[in-house]
Image 1 (tube, rainbow, N blue to C red):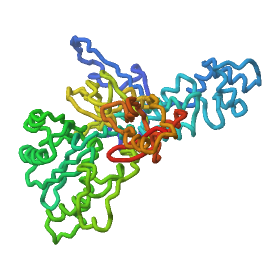
Image 2 (spheres, rainbow, N blue to C red):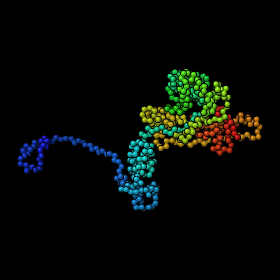
Image 3 (tube, rainbow, N blue to C red):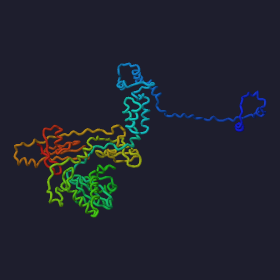
Image 4 (cartoon, one colour):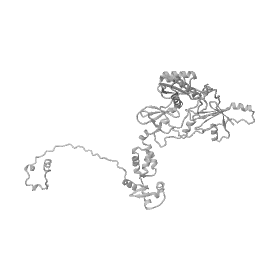
Length: 526
């Protein structure tokens, strides 16, 4: 038939239907067909697939679900018929907008925004977040098309519950500054770090936490053996420290270096990886030293320029203590060429250590995790920025040990952890500790002899402000005769007499004034 159709396609013809009995010229072969034998076939299973595409929400869907929703149908009845009655709690969000509600084609509108029935809300939220564009953009799009009570909160919850967005989000808000405890004596805690390469040399930097006294050793090899050798040289001059703070450099975490620490009874404190702020004392000095060496004349040797910088730096008063590093370390200034021009003076005031840094983070909130908490840990290897993990242990006030789902053990700072519950507020507020003060002895009477008053002045109590990295917060210790006051505060206001501000906040009827500064602040009661 196909062959005939091709042959006849070149002609114009008309096809008419005739019954078989009207065919006079039919050939015999067409009337005598051969008998056909049908073979038996097994029944084949046929699978029917039905493809269901996700259709977008249309006005027809909104109209159909609005009629079946009891709350929206009642609102439509009030809008169309003007019927008033008792306003229930469910109707209240709509009734406060009653003058702006309207009905169009069976859909309830607030202004130009369609009010979505509850069955369609989750679908629209998924469509809003399909581009992972963030909370702000999702709200801007939603406010142009639709509304329902609690829409903003639903958008925020939808964005916060997206695991893909959480794993790629930015760093969390920095935690409040947790300053180190100020050592009572020099060379109790030493911060070390490596600087360089600078002019084809590496520098081993050590800074005393009490006096801020720096030590710098020029090194061509930064292996553990050479590092230990330079530290032994420093320890031979100033003694063994109680604590040594460093980063996680390979030469500082080797077995040889750890053995050296244990043999000398030194506690080795390592900062969290990729968090240099923990070892900020050494890091800041490295920056200052590099700037000074790069700015100095290259015609002089590196040793000469370094020694000139160290002499000037060690004699410079510290911005926090107002005392030079040499005075805090050795109770005297290092003699230089300016001694003939300016006599040595004892400083009378002191600023609280790291006051400026604490003020910058004063409004930050504490975030605290417990053992077993599910968190997202910052990933510094290839892959996603955040990895799910479980808190294994709390190694410090702001340091944690976590275990990832890949059974990797990481040490992370609190700034490098996120709450995996993905709540809108990732922080848990810890209320500040209320200072508790114990009154000093009665102030001396004004009728005492000048000599006795002078003796009282010489035996004034010591007020020391310390920033404890392992405690709950800064501490103030005041010795008034046989009475000792210990208080913990979260922040002290900046003023020449910081302890007086605490007493004023506590409405104390007496005041303390600063008398004299050596390495701390000495105060006496009035």
